[in-house]
Length: 298
Image: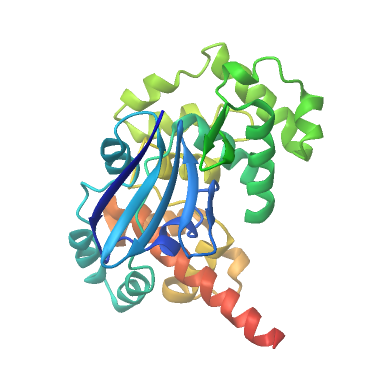
């Protein structure tokens, strides 16, 4: 482990808030100077924008440039992708402009599985706290700039954790789900490396759905936000249902909008970029609602 620094030219397809607060990750936190510090793999990294540069600095296990390029998907041309999506219709164009700096991270598959099991029927502040407690209890310690951080524990590090141990960390009904999924991985009933090699997304989804606590929405989040990187999937939650109904379906009763109808529409409109389209739409609709709520409170 060594302290390293890496800089790239500022990029309009790289905005810190858009990346770290669009609902795809839970281990990045905003600092007083506007930068974000997070942990991925065995790396602790701070990311900030300064003087037309994006600066990455932290304690990295391997070469920082290699780690950053992979994790932040820097080889992907997001300008080209946004141009394609913006031509679909005005709704998509507005959403892309709003979330202009979003990038889909290449997150570790195991960590993404557990994180999104925890996310079910939960809110982001609580998800983050639960994950932090798990990492503190069972992860490896990393010290950077006199601060202590913890890696996300491996399945092996959770081998002897009981259901009650998980419950004591505030997992509630999710305790048994984490326990069962951990042991399914340890017993090789689901082989994560094989999932990464499988080209058929539907086969990967079916395997993910066998994991305890993984339903269709969580499976699609894992497919999209992990290093499986299946951009054709379209995770559907209350926000996505709402925005798809408002913009395209126009059902007077939003709760009656059928998931299959949304999936069909997403395939037809967005094709193999459906996952990224979902992120732009979700991010725009969620923040619109938050702004409306905050205005009403004043």
